[in-house]
Structures are given as C-alpha cells and as structure tokens.
Amino acid sequence: MARLSPYLLYAAVAASSTTAAVMPDGTTEPPPVVQAAPGIESVPNTATTVQSVPARPPHGYAAEEMQKRAITQIQFWKERNFRGQYAITTLDPKVCYTFGGPSWTQWDKAIVAVNIASNGPCRFYEGHYCDVNSLGPIEYGRPIEDLGVYGWARRASSIRCD
Image (cartoon, rainbow, N blue to C red):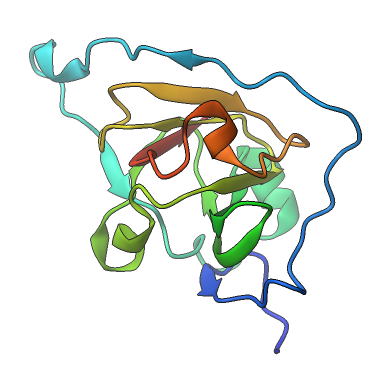
C-alpha cells in the first residue's frame, strides 16, 4: 500500500488481523454524556455555521501550521478495537462539522472507535448541527476503542473540536 500523507482524507478497508492501535496503559473514566444547550436558532440575527467535514486542509499546510492554528487531526473507525473501515481528517477549532455531503454521509451514525491524533479535545453530537446530546470531551492521548461502552456506538452525526 502506498504511503499517504497524514493530511489527506482517506478511507480504506483494513484487514482485521493487521489493523490495531496501541492503547495507553491503564483504564480511564468515560467522557461525560451531557444534554446539549438550546441551539442558536432561537437567537435573532444569528446564522448557524455548519460545514461538511473537510476533505483535506488547504494546500501547503505543515505540521507546524496545524499546531499554530490548533487544527485537530482525528481518526474514525467503523468497527471497535480500531478495525475495519477508517478515515483520517483535520478539523478547524470551534467549527461544527456534520457527517454529510458526498464524502461523509457514510460516516453519519457509523463511528464506533475514535482517536484524536493531535490537539483537540472534541465532542460528538447526535444532531447534525452540534446540537442534541453530546459525548466528550474526547482528548488527545486517550483513544476510545469502543464508543459502545459509553452507549455512543453509531450515534454521532456531527463533531466540534476546541
């Protein structure tokens, strides 16, 4: 398999016997599930800002630029234990991204495992506009191999990172 840039979005079906992530030692408490605050649609003259998850960062981004802007690199899997189909992408801070559009519809309510590869933290939301219930913060260095343990397998429809 050709080596791909970590800044390109790609999805692949990985062989179950060869795809596994190294988990940190020890156990951790689950991120809290919280009821989302009312949306901004009730605030007059305020437009909701929602974007599809980007295919890749703008041309020329380097790791230093990602760090400077606090861009989060995140990995998603459709199977627990970091197996099966996966995707890697980058997200700008404080922007709500919905799992929609031609590239991302297949990820709506499909994510079972997640790893924040840089920066973060991030929250998953049940609603498409970073509304309804949320799970998080999901932090760098604390990958979650099975969101089902917290009742969140195949529930996320949007994401926002700090």
